[in-house]
Amino acid sequence: MVRKNLLFVFLILLVAVSAVSAYQFSPLEQVFQPTGAESQKNYTIVNDSDDQIAIELAVYIRDQDAEGNEIRKKSTSEFRILPTDKIIMQPQSTQIITVKYVGSQTVTVEKSYRLVASQLTYSQGKNQTSQSMFNFLYVYATSLYVVPSESRADVRLATVKAVTGEDGKQLMELSFQNRGNVHQILRELNLTVKDQKGNTVTLTGAEQLPGVDSMNILARKNLKKTIPWPEGIPFDAAGTYTGTIEYTN
Image (cartoon, rainbow, N blue to C red; front, side):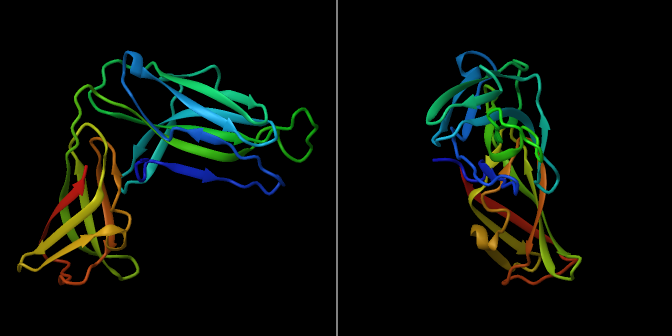
């Protein structure tokens, strides 16, 4: 089963393009070793349309900011894409692509990446006047991890605070720490919060923990998230709160 929140599939529709030919790209997540046979993996592209299509492949270093938003930087030297990173596919055809990790062989903290497969407009030699030869259409952004020989995820809830948003709404600010050396997805998250008077509330699921339930925290990252202040526990901006989390590995 594909891990929740490890997959992003983007569809970009260009006004200038009247028809778009779809394609399939898989798998959507791969785990690499820094050396040996598992340092390279195969991917499959299927053009199930009746048109020629153009695909471009690129690997991006994947990072997170303090709020958990994804940051990407193109990786130009850590991977090789074979036979090529730009492919013209015939109608109703299949292409196997090999991605090989050639970066540092010493990996103590998991390295996170996105392998992005972007469909491009392809003129098949026809003249174009109002658009360039290549423009992005369908994009698959898949998860790629290079893992250490010994891995350990250790996500903790560091702090819980009562804060007021810019619009005056009462919010709960949650600070998470991943002290481990691999990423962790907070699946089926249960969050229990207690105030200094002993009042307790337990929150679970995407409705009560929007943006937090099933969140992916990359290795060694500290993230802050805010959720609407829950019922069942008094809001006190000067109060002291503690919390614990449970999730499924």
